[in-house]
Length: 145
Image (cartoon, rainbow, N blue to C red):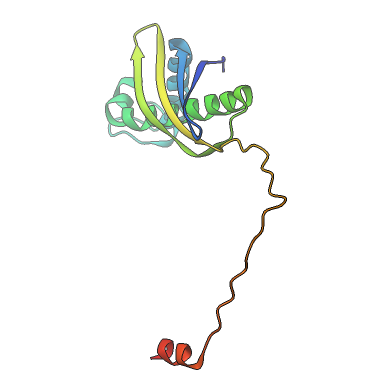
C-alpha cells in the first residue's frame, strides 16, 4: 500500500483535522481486492458462487464494499499520521468529507480527538484541606427510609 498524502491541522488542543489523499489506482486496487474476497463469500442468484461479475456485485454490495475499503484506508492512514505527527488518537475518527475524483485521487477529511499535551505542573507548596463529614444516626435513618 503506497503512502497517502496526509495534512494535519490543529483545530484546538484536543482536536485535529486530517486531509488524506490517496492515488486513485490504490483505491481501485483495494476495491478490486474487496470485490474478489466478497465474490468468494456470497451467492448471487443466477451465478455459481465465486463466478458473479463485478458489475453485478457492485449493484448489490457497492455501499458495503466501499465502507470496508474506506475503513481500511482510514485505519492505515491514521496509523501513518499518528506515527509521523506524534498524535495519540482517542476514539474513532469522524469522516467529514469524502470525494473520489475520476482517475486522479480519493480525498477524505477526518476529525479526530487526541490526548492533550500536558506541560509540567508545579504542585509543590500547594496546601490541601481534607474535609471529613461525620455520619450521624439521623443520616442513616433518613437514607434507609
